[in-house]
Image (tube, rainbow, N blue to C red; front, top):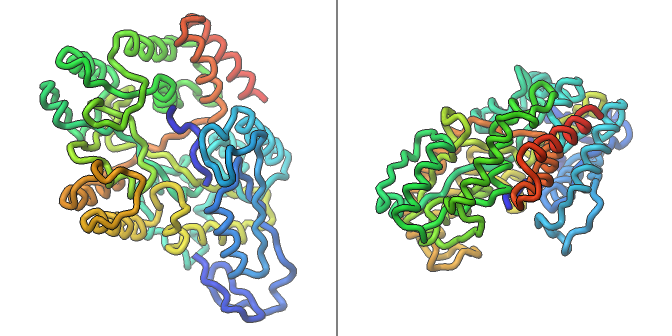
Length: 446
C-alpha cells in the first residue's frame, strides 16, 4: 500500500550567557526585553525523533522559548518509536483534522501545525495561516537561496507560501531498462506520459512476457489518480466524485488488474517487475537502486505534466492568531538550518541544497568503497560507477520537480475505504462514487 500518511515530520545558538539573541538579527537582546519564557505549541498527528530532538536543541539555544509538541492520535504504535503504516488509523487522521481545524477556526489552537494531513486549501481560504513571505521579507538572516527554489515556488498557494516544506519525497517509476528493451518498449525517462499510454505499454509487455509483471497496488494507484486530479475532484471546495471522471478512474484501475496488466504483489526483484511505483524518501534510497534499473517519470492523467511530482513530508504552517509568530518562525528557520537538515532522523530529501548534495556524494563514495551500512543486500547494491552517475541523475530529478502533490488526507482516506467494496465486486462504480460523494460532501461542509 502506498504510504498515504507521510512521516511527520537559522538561528545562532546562545553561548550560555545570561541573555538571549534576537530571532532575526542574531544580536544579543538586553535583559529588559527578554521577559518570561514563551511557549510555541506544535500540533502533529504523531511525534517522532526528529522534531523531539530539534525541540531540545532549539531550547538549549533559546532559553526563553519552550517548544511543546502536541500529539493527536487514538491508536498506539506497535513498538516504541514505530512509524509503521499499521500504527496509523482513519481515527487518527479524523481526530487530528477535526481537533486542529476546530481549534484554529475558533481562534485558538497550536502556534505551529504539521500540514501534511490538514486541509491546507481550506486553511488558506479562511486566512488561518500566516503568509510566510511576510516573515521572510523582514528577516535578513534567512537565506532562501540555500533551499531548492523549484520546490519552494511550487509550494506556494497563489502568491503566498503558507506552509514551509522542510523535506519532501519525489514520486517516480522505477523501470527495468533491459526488460523494456527486450519487449520493444521505448520509454523516454525525461518526458511525461499518460496512464493511457502506460496501459498500452503494459499490454505490449504482457504479450512479450507475461512473467515480467508491473508491480502496482490498486489502492496506491487510486491514491495517485485522485491526487493527480484533486483540483477537478474537489473544485473550489465542492466534491465531484459522483462524476464520469471519477468512475472512469475506478473502472480503469479495476480493468488493468482484471486484464492481468498489473500485479499488486510488490516485489523488490528487478527480474520480475518491469515497472514499480516508488517514492524517493532519502538520498540513500535514490542511490542504492540495483544495477539495470532506472528512474522514469510516473504517468499522469493528462500526460502533459513536465518534471516529477513531489510531496512535502515535513511542512509547517503558523497559526495566523498565534501570539508567538516570531518565535514560531525562528523554530522553522532552525529546522531549515544545515545542522537539522543533516539529521539522520529527518525523513525525506532535505530542503537544503548543500546538505542534500553532500549526502548524495557521501553515499556514493561509501558504495564505491563498500563501506555503506544499509539494509539493502550487498548483492543488490549498484557498482560504484553506477552510483556516481546516479548522483547527477538524482540531482537533475530534484531540480526539475515542480508539481506539488497535495490533497485533503481525510478525503483520500474516505475514497480508499469505499474503494475496497468496488474492487471486491460488492458494489458498482456508480454506487461507490455516490457513497464517496456524500461522505466527502458531509465532511467538507463541517
